Image (tube, rainbow, N blue to C red):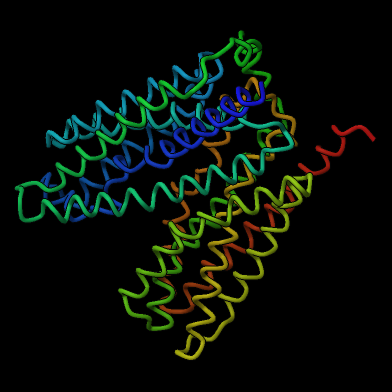
Length: 414
């Protein structure tokens, strides 16, 4: 009997790992420009404006369909949603690999946005269902760590494929896309066998328009959305730390790139799982969020006031990596506040759609705002606005987390 339970538990965790790895890789093809910008431009004969246009089509589509995508995640079987969105991802990736026209590439990006949104909202619901309300920190923390590992490994593998075909093929990027397509196929097959079939209970309460309207009336949805927006704003601002090290401290481009790789992919491997586990022990995810925002304020202040000299380069690098550690830890627990804020499990998909629309909105404006400040105030002066932005958003995040914490206390019987 015990052996059977152990087998089921092992199968559950293998399914969790496969699903999380898939979630870590679904954005690689639509965001191909992040790693393969020059190859993308060369392969498709694109201009920089063309690249911006297809990314705008992708981003706008995602924004428009987040909420209806979330409703679908609550309305239909989660396993089918995950498998269906993965199948669409596979088709789009292999279509991408045929090197179509830019007009067709626009269509592909729109379909990729649909696939990514449906996968993401279903993924958040699936991850939340993997553990009890007292295990959400660990579940989301482990998820963030696994996604970081998956992103790191797939980046190295894809770069190796590109390098191998650089002198052997007319379009090396084509083989990178085929590699991604095959990876998605393997993950899809693994999910088919490992993801549990629905017993119908997860969607039992999401049966009418009234349910979806009710989600809009849950204050916790808007609080978590604003909390994610604050945390994500700090993340967007922190992406300027690479150019901060080269511009203000004179660090070499190669070394700065190495630091950026560790910051972007290596740190989250351990920070999110560890903090998630700690958050479970603390018993309040909002308290953990508050502590992490306080750490971000302290580290942003260090970066704001540290003198830009060669002698202070090492402390600056340590502060940058420490900030990344805190940032990934925060990413690993902010969704865990959904239970504390009173969001019903059955309507997680709809709530995630709303939270995603608002939470990731800084992508649409913050880079423009911060870039404008940096253009108007060249050098170290411009970065004062970057780190000042982090402090402001972190302070607002603390206020929101305090409100969520009070809501959680009211839910808990004395």
